[in-house]
Every structure is written in C-alpha cells, then in structure tokens.
Length: 273
Image (tube, rainbow, N blue to C red; front, side, top):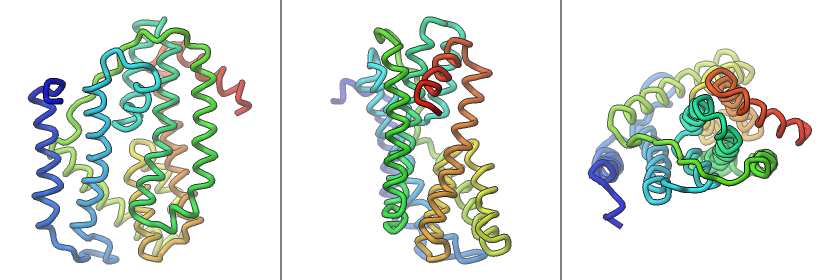
C-alpha cells in the first residue's frame, strides 16, 4: 500500500489523525454563545466528518486516479469537491475540446455523488431528518444518474486523466470550515428565531453557492435540537443543493467550452428537464 503513497499522502493521513485523535478529544462538550448552538466538540466532529470524506476521495484518487475511468473520476471528484472537479474539467474542455463529452460525464457523476454525500451527512447528525429525506433524495439521485448515463453513451472511449486535487487535511482549511460552520449555525439560529423558516431558504440560497456541506450540517443540527421539522429541513438543504448546481452550471458556461455546455444541455433536454 505504502508504495502508492508519497510523502504528501502520508502527511495527509497524519494530519487527519491529528484532527480526529488529538484535537477532538480535548475540546469541551458543552454549548456556548448565543442560542446555545456552539458546541466545540460537535462542531469539530463534523469537521472531522467532512475532512474524512475528502480524505477518502483523495486517497482513492492516489490509488486509482491515473488512467481511471469516467465513473471513478466522477465518484472521486464528488467525494473530494464537486465544485473543484467541475472547474477543473471545464477549464480542460476549453483547452482540449475533444475532452468535452468525457468532462460532462465526470461532472454529472460528481453531482450525483453530492446527493449521496448530503444523505450521509444528514444521517450522521439527525436520524429523523434522514428518514424524512431518504425517498426524495433517492429520486434526486436516480435523476442525476440518468443524466450521467445519457451523457456517458455520447462520450465514447475514456482516455482522460482525472483532475488533480490537493491535500484535503491541512489545518488551515479545517479551521476555516469550523469557523464557517460556526457562523452558519449562528446565522441559521438567528434567522429561525427572528424570521422564521422562510428566512432559512434565503440563507440556503446564498450559502449553497459555494458549500452545500455547511448548510446541510447546520440545518440538520436544528432538526436534532428539535427546532425545525425534518420535512422542512430537507427542503431547505435542497435549496442549497440547487443553488450550488446553478453555480456549477455557471462555471460550465463561462469557464468551459461550448461543446461541454452543449453536451450537458442536450442530455438535460433528452431527460425532459
């Protein structure tokens, strides 16, 4: 196994051990701050969850990335960062126009994996939310897979190299995610207290542009605390997902080639969406 891993990869594993086995246990397990929503250990536990998902994709890329097929490229891209994967393949399609159909496949599969990622995060934080959300998200996942398949059958042979991804366990990004998640918890709690559920949709719309994980976890935390019905929570989360989907569509339109945009659009039309 070690022959597949370089110094940077071993460093990533050790940094994850630092985040999960050293920092996590020493954090206080009690609520602080306004609305009582800032629990340092719970916040860091979810940081460990996200970093762990990213690390699994990163290590998978190291073992299977070079010469990997479109399916694996999309799965790993969705596990690490679907937005970064979209940007990487969009830029490549502009330089190498012949890669556009394969790039479209990878981007669509990565988006489907995001649905699975959302369901996993909901299940970790709140079982009632998972129960309420699993059926609609299975439908959403099935639709994403159908779109991916429609693009796949047009793509032809896969000769592309997966996009490179950086080490996902650096301490600075982990701290940044923790800070962002804490701010999201406060924002969501304030909105829920002062503006009601309708305000949450606006928060999800804005936050989802760049990061679905933050709004998923913070909204699930409200369900876990009994402050938001599960049926309402998964709709808020899906607003963030659709917002992020629109953002990635913008990346495809402005950073990718015309051929890439056409490949995605034709598949959507064929699926009737």
